[in-house]
Length: 120
Figure 1 (cartoon, rainbow, N blue to C red):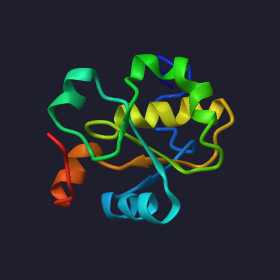
Figure 2 (figure 1 turned 45 degrees about the vertical axis):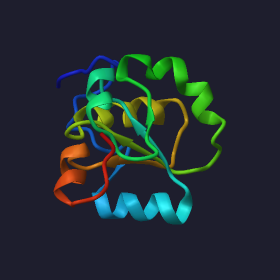
Figure 3 (figure 1 turned 120 degrees about the vertical axis):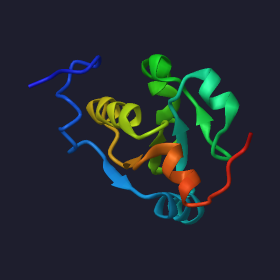
Figure 4 (figure 1 turned 30 degrees about the vertical axis):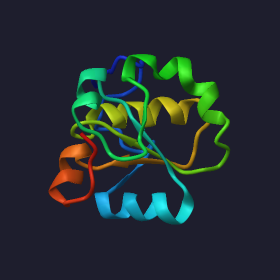
């Protein structure tokens, strides 16, 4: 079994978060005021992003856990470029007691393929 930088199982352990497609994520943001967290590097986020996404780079996520708790029971959708880094963050947040977690399957690449809006 492989381990990731957060000390958990490899990315094949998908029990921590539900994977949703881009249209479902958009619906969750509209219907339930889901919080979208983009965990990409600053240069990636600066080049293009999903509107209203909050940027918390992967390396800073552990420092932002308490600020995320302020959002109560709002669903949290995690996004990155392809869905791998955001999946690691799902597992980390699950370990810290978060339950209403979603991973944007395919990341911003899939979001663009679905012709959903991006900000440059």
